[in-house]
Amino acid sequence: MELRHLRYFIAAAEERNLTRAAEKLFIAQPPLTRQIKQLEEELGVELFVRKPRGLELTPGGEYFLGQARQLLDKLSATIDETRRIAQHRKTVFSIGFVPSVFYGQLPKMIRRLRQNKNLEILLYELKTQEQVEALKTGKIDIGFGRVNIEDPDVEQELLFAEPIIAAVPAGHELGRHPPTMQELSEWPLVAFPSGPGPNFADITQALFHSRGLKIRVSQQVNDLQTALSLVASDMGFTLVPEQVCKLNREGVEFVSLGEPGITIPVIASRRRGENPNAVMRLVNSILHELVENRLSGRYP
Image (cartoon, rainbow, N blue to C red; front, side, top):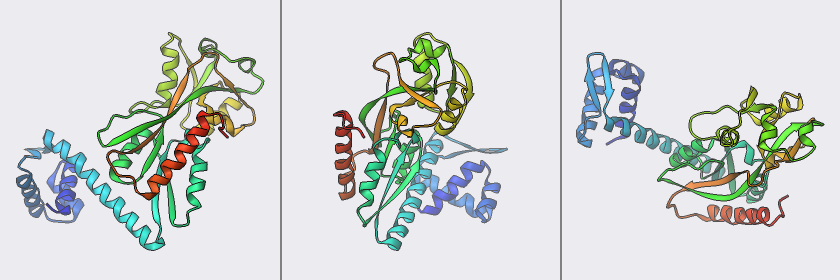
């Protein structure tokens, strides 16, 4: 099996039509048909069902499509990293993160790693599910997120449980004492939109739904900074991880919740079964120290 077999198969699977796939690949259709047939013979399975209107993936074809994409993504990431290493003569270490973990100790870790002149640190803002895929393709080496994702190729470590707090307009009555979920539900919420898979929006809205409380969403926003701007404009309150209070945003007060035990995890994701190299051992050592600081109350 050669790389061209994978590229040809992916093109045919995406176009669901050999003529269009051949045009996309800038080759004639007969050679493409032969290459797909050779791939099927080598695998010993049919990847497509041929129909009058085009191609349809078999269950085996659906599975192979996902694996083929991962293989080519992994190859692309390897080539990019090889070029960077050759150009800079540095070891490249890539980190994925969700924005809400970047207000705590993660910048400290990155700052310490950057003191090593032989390291080049690359940062990627990715949702937790995207981090899992990026780990599998080699795009990142470690990810920091909020959500548990079950995947046989990735292991996740709970670093600590972080309190959820409320961001309310400065001077608002919600800031006079730690509000309960019941009290918060009586005010408009600036919400983050839900998406595929579990995310922060699902977690926070479930806090109300599990208590039988309805919420009144005043606005949906895609990022934290916009949410805080709307809170400062008295559009409502929003729920955020405790680390966010380090922003000291004008017009916004951060208050603890009046109910104990409302937290959200901070999770590190790594490739499963991979022996840590020198850089990963350094990362793990710094991370252990920073987590100990957080748990012992020396959180900066």
